[in-house]
Length: 238
Image 1 (cartoon, rainbow, N blue to C red):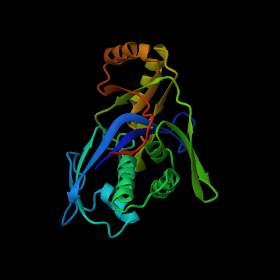
Image 2: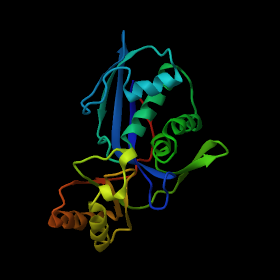
Image 3: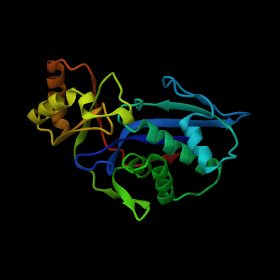
Image 4: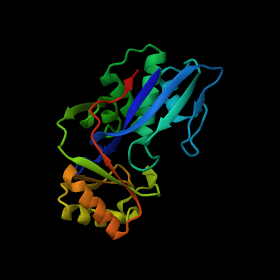
């Protein structure tokens, strides 16, 4: 069994903790089979390889006596860069429990549980539902609805350094103001700090991306510029 989860970008414009979009970077979890203890193979920095891995922790919160399995994890999503790496792991864990535990969860139930763990829906809801999602807390629960996708490319400027969410403030990403100015010169709709950062996201037409890329190179900014598109579907299983 393979579980595929998209990345996400949150805090779009005025949508702090409420508006997020699924993007075309993927976390893939191959469930290789039962094991005597949890084993999580990956090459993601110093993240755990055992039952303390966030994917497994999340699954076991839903099904505490879940049979241990051997997992192989691959991810295009940079860790601690404001692209929803932890949210994708949480959603992968929910889906792992859903499949192995035969829970038959609805999307609404998945969103509710993910929001309880994450605290707000802006990353986890689009990761589950796909596309652009607006969510909030209502009467002690969480509600999330899909919205029309903007016809723009999401140009992600990804610095080499990372920023932990609990430490994140805009002054920790000095490139933000400069990228906003460069983007507007190239016809961008908007530039915002993706999640807690340090990734800076710029929305622009696909035809304007080469000019934006050239402007960043000319300015000597050292981060990677990655063109991303909205991912129309959320978590999938094959």
